[in-house]
Each structure stands twice: as C-alpha cells, then as structure tokens.
Length: 113
Length: 112
Image (cartoon, rainbow over all chains, first blue to last red; front, side):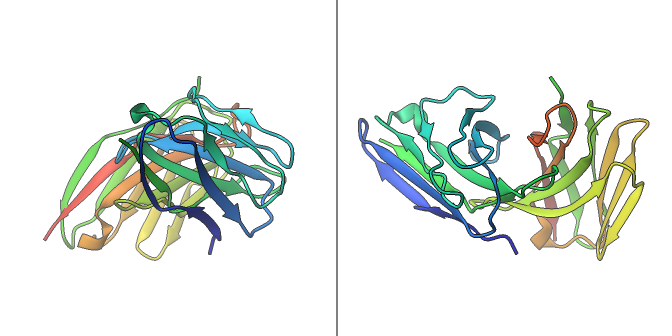
C-alpha cells in the first residue's frame, strides 16, 4: 500500500493569499511529482523532482513553485492565489532507480474565491 | 511528443464484461499502466504490464498488450457498480524517461 499524504484535502480561500499545499511520502521514493487536474479531466504535470535539491518545471506552465529540502517532503506554493488556480492538485512519487509506477496521494481540491 | 489516447466514455450493464482500450505512440515504452480514479480521489494503480509481456491477469482484471499495434486493453470481468470510475492508461520508460505519460481517461458507467 502506497503511503503518500496530501494536506489539506480541501481549501477555499480568497484571492491574493499565499498558499502552501503539503505532500509527504514515507516510502523513501526519490522522484516526486505535482499534477494539476480539473475534475474528471486529464492530468497536467506542473513540477517534478529527481531528489533532494532538484526541482524541474513540468509540461504545463504554472505560477506555483516547489521545493525539495527533504526526500519525503515536496510542498507546492502559490504566492498570490487567483481564481484561475482553482483546480485539484495531485502529488505522486516513484521509486529510486529504474522507471516504474507512480503512487498518488488523495489530492487537494483548491477553490479560490 | 509522445501520446496516449483512449475513448472518453464506456457504458456497460452490471455483470457484463467491460473492455477499455488505449493506444500509445512510443514504441520504446517499458511499462504500461492502468489507473483508476473515483470522484474526489487521487489515482489508484490497478495493474501494470512490462512491454515484453502480452498478457497479465489479476482476479477480475485482464490486461492485453499488442506491442506491434501499440494497443493496450483492460478487461474487467463481472463489472460491478463499484467499478464506475475514470480509468487512465499510461506509459513510462520510453522517450519520456521516468516521466509517465497519461491518457485523458475513460469514464466507465455501470448500469444496474
């Protein structure tokens, strides 16, 4: 069973606020990912990390930023939230070494008023 | 870039078999996956197959891979209402490296 946790599960907040979405995994996975997904729609990779101190932008441009100071932790930050940021954000991780399946958290549903 | 395509909708009656199809373009893909997503949740890995395999069976799930045609299918036997969800086909290990390329998802509706 994959152990990857996202908090909060739901967040409703006003425009202009700074937001941090948390993602932690207890599997020792080196690679971690953030996806943006509108409900029931396709996934868009917005950030990924090969390991500690490594972050890369994904295929979809995003105003968010990420950091990877510890292996288990990969938070995503929006400095100034806007209504266009309303979406579901999914965090995932995959194991060291060869390619393999990604394991997903339950997601954070973000609504910006 | 590399692509994964799936039909958007499938509707079946409870107790029938469901077959969800997927095509991909990257012939060098190493792993091919099926994920399930229920409303408001993340993606759950259902099963995966290595590119050197033709078939994998796991209880009610059967995965078939036709590498020549770059076609992947997921068969769910005795489909139940609890199987209603979005099913994502995905691949990794090809030109995208460790990144996973996802299809847009097939919405399975199971009628009682």
